[in-house]
Image 1 (cartoon, rainbow, N blue to C red):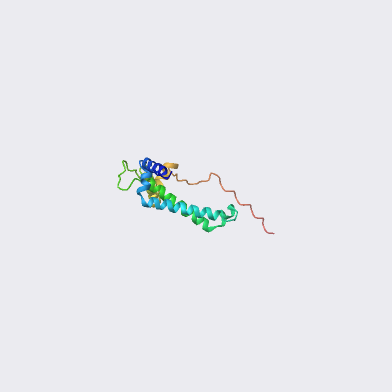
Image 2 (image 1 turned 90 degrees about the vertical axis):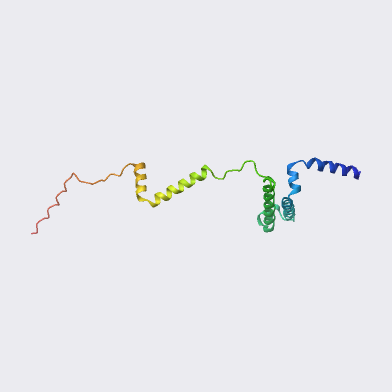
Length: 155
């Protein structure tokens, strides 16, 4: 029976060794360490969650539970990042561009705002273009003022 189990385990290991994620897991020590930390922290969090208190109360009040959950999620995030990354020594086929048109547009907008804030002449030109030229307005009245009422004579 033990010989059959060993043969099955060897066949399974040989079959899974061809899978890229399994190979990465077997070769990368940091990835394995992150997975171990994540599993241990999740176990500790589960144990703290089932320590006799109501789970809702434990989730809301237990600071150590919060730390274990955060530790587990951080380790899982690091592990998935390492698993997604290209293997060490491999060069990516196509490098991703960072920014591009969006970054150029942001720089242009910020530069324009700074130029408008700094230059009064430019600011006036933009306002004239948006709202039309400013007209000078002199007010002149067409009516004549009324004469003040006559004061009664003193007797």
